Image (cartoon, rainbow, N blue to C red; front, side):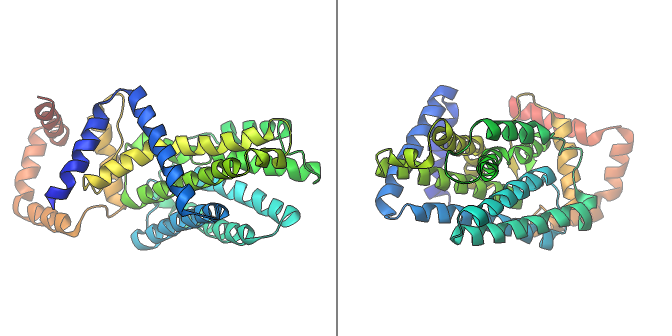
Length: 334
């Protein structure tokens, strides 16, 4: 089992040691290589957009599975789900009045499941909602997106309101994941199903971005003219690229954690805060079954055999867990 992983670990370690500029260059090169690969294996590039929405639906399905199986919404951002519902509802309206196709059906299904997730977080699983961590002010993104849509929108023959709404949903979609990333940055710990969901969003954003880039290349730039005049075509591409890069950093740590066989994804922090990490981990353990069954059995056996001894140690030392954690941290550092 360990043999095949060694080359991957070696590459991951080498990338980790590189300066930020080199990492950014490697990310760009990897993205370009993936685009070339998709261009040759996918003949109809419209299928990439359908695949993007399908992957998004898979991500939502993972959330539903998490909520139904674990009966907890710990680590999920309600505000991110609300932003997703807003741009999906606006896009669905535009799809009905401007064009009706398979994307309308996919958006309808995704909106329905997103509304169900919002309902579960707000009512059925409200006790496990980490509201103190989900403190991103959504008007910081909604208001700028609305103002930008008023200034830059398609110059087609549709009604001005519909064109502004379409631009608004494009801009809002690009930043809708920010509250979820904010929650994960606050907790520094991401449980598996939430990590799978955000990674699915990253894959969906990349496929959508690849769809637009390859379409522009195939039409030799004529697609930009078909989208309209002015800044709108450039803003569409920029929005797709922004979405991809917002999630690229998380996807890197997700793949790194997956390769390393880690069950719980731990995000890096500029300032080490062991006490905060322990508090967040204990909070998520109390409301979510994030440990393996073997670990839970071992934990129960330990509690039965040495529970009284542990109580005496903790009572004699006001903060035994944190001191043990600090000692372990020093040993690792040395």
